[in-house]
Length: 181
Image (cartoon, rainbow, N blue to C red; front, top):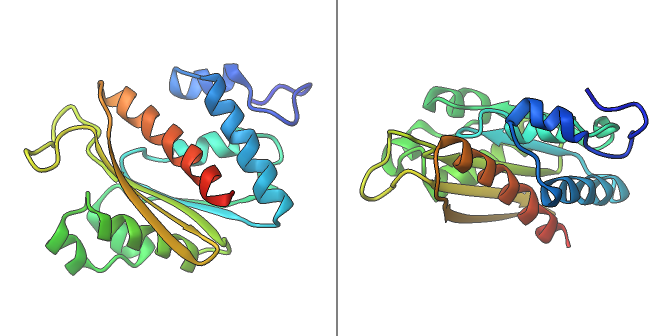
């Protein structure tokens, strides 16, 4: 998938095939993330719900990603969040899958259940259905674990399912770069 003459970068054609989109900022952010993690000898794990593995796919589309990408967990169902990442079922019951406590627990679980030191976690309502007044379509909670510290935030993205998922992927990577300094 990666073009042989571009071993350092993301092939625009391959990401376009995977997601039907590619942006210069995403490519830049992926290269920056790779360089930072590699230089700090850190490994990344992802815990994805609403993106269904898109973040992992984008990371591993970069040649040499095995030097800094450890694994990805696709935990789309509540049971998967509990089974794969150790998110307490009671936490999901009390707060809902799309919540700050669950995003934080996913980020922690991704590190604890991998060989990674850094994680990205996303859980949200990509749509077109599933939204509520409290958590409308486009609501996404993020969790990151960096240098042993947990960070979380919520974003509200506009657009259809593909747009929400693409924005989630881009924001998760961009914000991790910021947290890594």
